[in-house]
Length: 195
Image: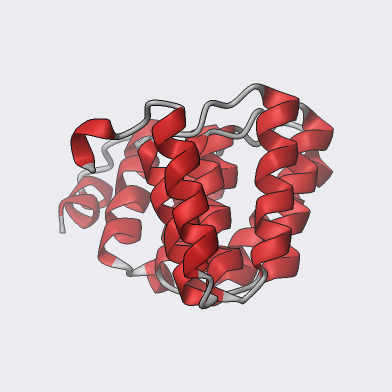
């Protein structure tokens, strides 16, 4: 309603205004309204250019509303245009969407792209991978990928990642492996107050 009033009063909107509206749509999962806003951005006088916040907001909204293909398409569009480079947050949002939909090949492609572009993963990245690969009964692959990423990027696992690894072990009916992970966590002095 506010946006419609702004248009009626011919209040000039900028990229920040449009990004705020898009963020509202993303939070409310009202992504069906996005095409009109993007059209309005292009036809505004002067046109409002999409920026990294625009893309991040759209990716977040499409992932949250279950439209991972559109979110991945936006990443491809960004890559083709070459104007913006995806950051860790954008990749993590996509990984979260992949985990929700159990799309292993897309998640592994995102991890490969992060490595190829030199975008360092975080503990959040590893948590998303652990959730996905654990649920999909890929425990060996999970530990292999986590070991590679921690070695390549010098990541010190936090309690959230260890918890996801332990949960993955139990999902795969490997309680002995879960206890081994717990021992490693305690040896690294992670989460002593929580155990």
